[in-house]
Amino acid sequence: MTDANLAFKYIIIGDSGVGKSCLLLQFTEKRFEPLHDLTIGVEYGARVISIHDTSVKLQIWDTAGQESFRSITRSYYRGASGALLVYDVTRRETFEHLQSWLEDARANANTAIVVMLIGNKCDLENNREVSREEGEAFARKNGLIFMEASAKTAQNVDEAFLKTASMIYEGVQKGVIDSAVVSEKQKPKRNTVSPSVSNENNQNDGCAC
Image (tube, rainbow, N blue to C red):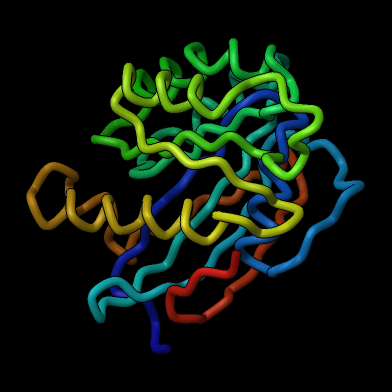
């Protein structure tokens, strides 16, 4: 695939330990790292996909979930056209904190933002504390897309990123999302707070679940 025509900035948000970094790694590198260190500040990954014969670079910022880093990670909402809001289906407190994360995203993004709600770790069915129906209800109430996923098994990981990208693309075509925000001319700014994870995976869109 040639250089991307568009660039969609994503942020992955949610409490610490819900599997945000594992989702990023699974999507960009097709692997699972069970003992991933906690993110300090932000990490970055990228992948080029195709939407309706248009190449799109997904620039993905994985943010720290610790409260002490919230002021740092808020700066990364600016220019984001997509957000993956993640909770852990085996930890109810991560579900209870979703409203705060969602309010942050909508308050700090400077454009319309497509938010995908992800209930991660759905492979751990025996340890579940949050039902699928609760996730669906929260999504309906707040106008979000919803999927349960597993970074470990790759279930719905590609679908979550690609569905969000498709909706961003539609928003740009309809004029709901500012086309200037998704121009490939806008390169992401790196942050030295944390090491970055970068993968230029130039593949067409496809689902591996």
